[in-house]
Image (cartoon, rainbow, N blue to C red; front, side, top):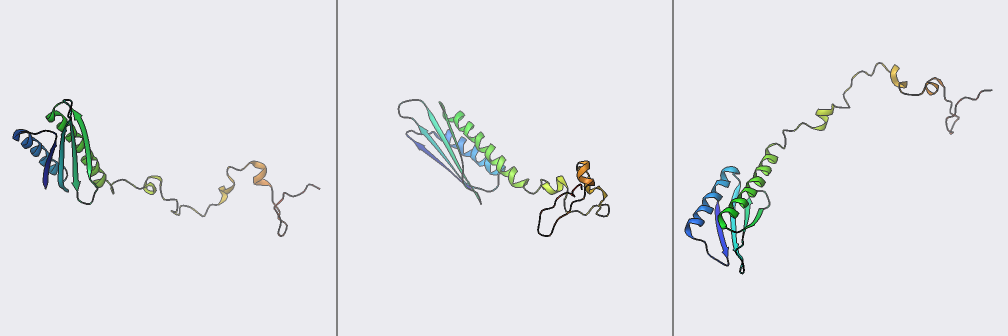
Length: 150
């Protein structure tokens, strides 16, 4: 696993670089498939603002990204690292629990299970009384009509 630190418009001392590298190495313990981490620290020209961006490359997945802005490097990096940890944990959880959820068929029951096809007496349940008692006649090639009262 490689950790690269890029700095724009300023410099970082060795203690801060070691701190960032040490914290980034802990991401591998969280998600084993991490192959590369790129941290970019950008200082603004006119102000005291710092922007930290993290790109994490994992096997078989697109890059994860996190951005944070603040006034100091260390707290801003910690906030960005926290966002990255949440993304990796959510992705890892989604991978691991992919097959653990029951299917809709298991929850609702299989509609194709043969239960009791012998008793067809209750087929007319739910129909109005006149419809269940009336007999319908259909002329050949025509529409079914109720019997006439003559």
